[in-house]
Length: 386
Image: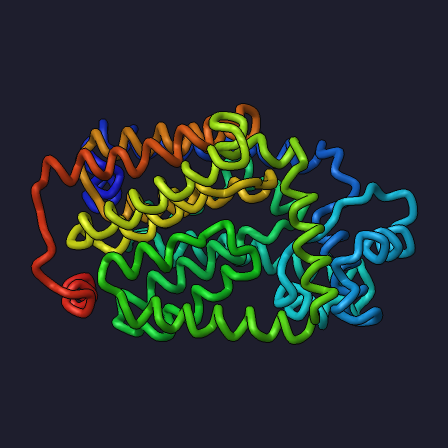
């Protein structure tokens, strides 16, 4: 009995009712543990503190100087005396999005941003959840009980906004609004590495209009960024990004410690990208949820460096694949993927294990099903709407 079936059938039978209660109780217990983590968290300087200093520097100093580490450190110390120095390497559109918050007092801006990120995860969970109160509760619990997700309450990272953009893109494509989906996907450009292969996977699966809309938004964002930064600002951005990427702490959740950096990592990235494109093409008839999940996991695999808050991205493929439905074996595999994601904050190598095992399992499932594409994206959207 799959999770979807458990939610769609009446709970009259005692074993079914007990299974529902056990699942909800387990998620509730882990959610309480996350609450404990929030109350005991030693985080004094949330991610948003550095985002705020970065945006403030851009508003006052100008965006040509915002990637100068001296400028960033000056604003961090001016706003938060005694805070450690963590550089922000997000592209200029991120500073533009934060500009209105940078004009507010930090405390108010922090509350607005944190509540917005919490709402982004809550909305994503309910947008992707199948119909039925039980399944909606399960999807909410899968977020609240997920260990990396407690960071949204104490550190306010950016990943929830990217997750929401992917959830909305899924909804728009299902409703056959591919251009709107592509424009929403462009929100991921605020931190491109988290979902960079999703538009490529969608293109391979036949969603050309979605990809073209995303590409147009991406080119516009890159062009505007280059104009605003100028040659000196571009050089500073590249130098700061390379310096950040060399930090061993952020490499822990990437392939670099496994395959090495430089050429070896570049070869691995090319091989993984080609494999993701091929798998998205091969499984294009099996549903949009499969395509987006492949793109997310591929993006995490080729990510050169990650922060702890980025691990929340592992929630999205679990949500999508549970919705896609399948056998009890598939639900068991997704449960293991969720547990692996939960533990990835403690054991970083599990990110690579989960992100590689998920596309591999999808490939094996495609071999078993033997299905091939016989309809385009528009027909898939109509089928899903019925």
